[in-house]
Length: 249
Ligand SMILES: C[S@@+](CC[C@H](N)C(=O)[O-])C[C@H]1O[C@@H](n2cnc3c(N)ncnc32)[C@H](O)[C@@H]1O
Image (tube, rainbow, N blue to C red; front, side):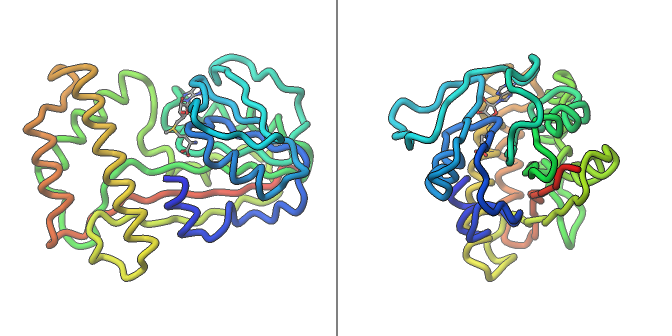
């Protein structure tokens, strides 16, 4: 996913980072963003934080430090000490995501950048009503997400959340459409990103099905119906990715 986004953006972020000296990635996952950022800014110290360890096979540049932590606990960092805080595809996993904006802002020095990025986990169709396969899958998926108090549509709310917090002097956003049907766009980078996202969310649904079983609301039959529709060449389905960059007051 990281390389798909980087190939589309042709850079790490649209924010003018200049020469940051302390960078924090919350939810480092595979470590791909932290490693690329540390390589781009070799003078900076990069902290990669996550509840899961980084992959053992990853070669870490010497300016990356890993910190294991749970974001539900108080942050173990001094407030106002980071030039950049990056958090991608994590808000969608956090209960009551709105409560995090102030906490994230508190980590930044004045003028520092918060790079908050997430999907609106909702398939949109430019031309047709959503079909029964997607609807059936969403019933199960949303039921699963609601039980955990998380918001699958949080990506679409990020900009508003950031603006209403009054913690930032500017809030910027681009919306990247990730198409399920490669014919929906001529841009090869967007075609690739759509393919990656489709593969990735398919894995999420398989994971829910395996973990919580039929009671979780996603059965193999429902998943097959969803796959049929997202791969239907007559449909124009997409999921929007919201990338924001905001400057701390
Ligand atoms: C979907 S992955 C995104 C990884 C990476 N940011 C990326 O863009 O590829 C979400 C990551 O957030 C981490 N995560 C989710 N909830 C967390 C929590 N409460 N505390 C710490 N890490 C968490 C997961 O372990 C996982 O690595």
